[in-house]
Structure formats: C-alpha cells, structure tokens
Figure 1 (spheres, rainbow, N blue to C red):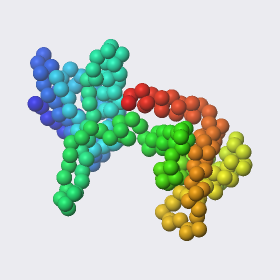
Figure 2 (cartoon, rainbow, N blue to C red; figure 1 turned 90 degrees about the vertical axis):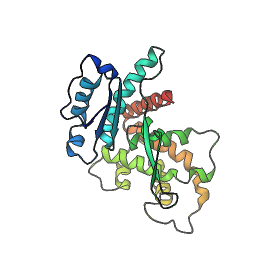
Figure 3 (cartoon, rainbow, N blue to C red; figure 1 turned 60 degrees about the vertical axis):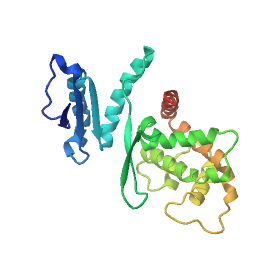
Figure 4 (cartoon, one colour; figure 1 turned 180 degrees about the vertical axis):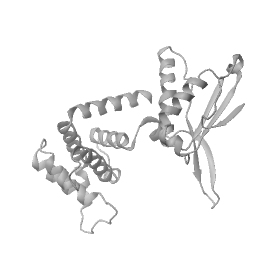
Length: 243
C-alpha cells in the first residue's frame, strides 16, 4: 500500500500499478486543497486511474464533491454496461453516548450523496412535501416553513441582490399574484422561527396551509426563472433514479 498527502509529488506507477492500493489524504485545513480542488482532482484522475484500489480521505467539502462526481461518472458507465459500480462512498459518523467521543464507519448519508448543495436539498424537500398525497400530519409540517423560507431567500437573494430582506425581494417578484405573495410572507413570518420563539397566540392549525404555500413558492420560482426551475426538476429526477 502506498500513502501520500493530498496529491503532491505523485509519481506515475509502473506496470505493477494494477496491484497497488493507493490512499490519498486531503486535509481540510490545507488552503491549497480548497483553492485548487478542480486542478488537483485532474492530477489525481490522470495519475491514479490505473491503480488496483484507490481510497480518498477528505474533510474538505469542495474536494469531496469533485471526487464524488468523478467516481459517480464511473459508476454510471458501469450501470450502462450492466455491471456493478466500481466505487462506494462512506463517512465517519461521530457520537458521544457516554461522554466519550466515538466514530463509526458507515455508508455516506443520502443528503451528501444525492445533493450537490444545501439549495438542491431545500428544493427537493419543498417539492416533495408540495406533492405529497395524502397530506402529512401537522407535526410533519412543523419544519417546512423554515425550509421554504431558506429556499426562497436563497433564490430571491440571487435574483434580486440589491434588496435587503425577504419582503422587499418578494415585492420585486411581480410574476406571481400579489395575494399569493402576501399570503406567503405572512405564513413564513409566522411559522419560520428565524431564531425566535413563536408568540403563544400563533395558531398551529394554520400549518395545514403548508402544502399550498409550498406550491406557491415553487410557482414563484418557476415564473421568475423558468429555465432554472426546469433544470432543478431535471436534477431531482436524476437524483431519484440513483436511489
């Protein structure tokens, strides 16, 4: 087995490279890993493509995404040929059940495996709950206003970067009816906590409006940027096929 710090001074293996087990460690604190993730992955791809086994260990999320996409490409080609995947993804899950920190080697969490960013995940969750049939219980809707708000803020901050807050951003989103925008902001202000505790008089039964509000959020995104919405739908379909 050959081990190296994240690819620095790698050499090309000779004829026996197919029998080599290679371990490459990428340090999350190493600035060069974060700044040059794409370039260094290209080095890794070129020089490690023919080793017998390759283990890549990293805490760096940017580099992790690059490696995941690289390996996923190989898995997709294998699937097209009717063959099993050539790579698997794992993580260390930490816990402290008795005050002692321990780590368990487990399969990679689906959140990290299926989604490229938090935004992708938020879009997925809003779409999933908006289409759920039959509707969920009120308890299951409890977290959705926060998720919907974060999705909307991310989208509108990109579309209207000069506006300071969600209300002003929604005022610019005139592609959707004013009544829907007013209902949306009222619902999100009431039920997304934003670091605060709800007032006692807030009626939790209003959570029953969640599916319609989520549909309004998706409608707003679609009408403001139809091509973006269509591409996000394609992303969700591709992620669903992987499961």
